[in-house]
Length: 128
Image 1 (tube, rainbow, N blue to C red):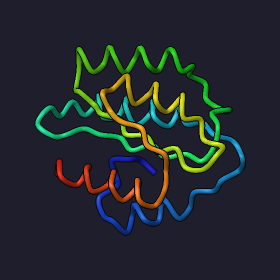
Image 2: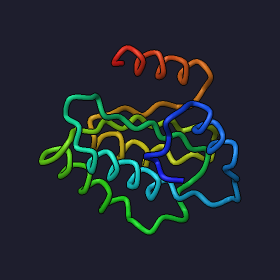
Image 3: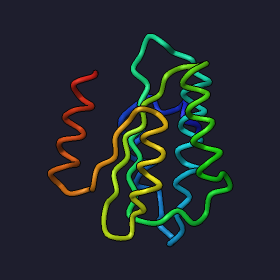
Image 4: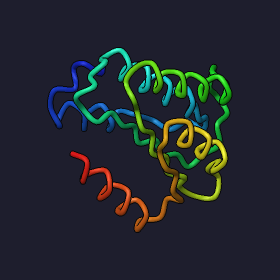
């Protein structure tokens, strides 16, 4: 399913429900894909943000952390600014990797408790 077809909440809910966890975490690839799509849209009139939440360690991406950080920094200077908010949920999440991604974009990283997730989404909703 193309991200462009996410026209309704039901479509998005169905896509999320179809996701399966299999033990690998390609967090960097996921962030990169979302980031590139926002850059492709090029909409400087909107607030462009990504929320990345993981309970695991990065172990399956094709892009390296250093490469992704450089791409985010360069893209935010020359293209559309995209802020990335990261949530480390559980003891297996790699907080340092999430911090590097968030810092590259001017975003934030939080430990994922129910309270911090609520606070982050409250903060995000104030932008929209």
